[in-house]
Image (cartoon, rainbow, N blue to C red; front, top):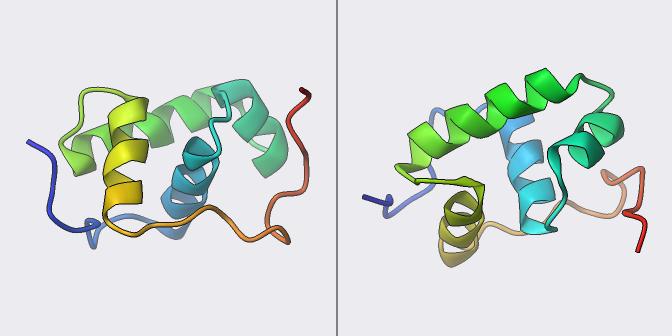
Length: 83
């Protein structure tokens, strides 16, 4: 069951990951942008899925968007996705 509000237990780093999920970025893209390993991003995504009561990363993004969570400010996003 998805939550009615953004979980208070979300860490600042998880909030950054949510912002990238909202942009549709993949784990490797997020890892590069944040300067962490793909495994670390995978762990953050797994924690977010659990905290949001979601079944996958796409539900996390949908729930976050529905709750008014927005994408990261441009100053936070250092690398652009290759189109």
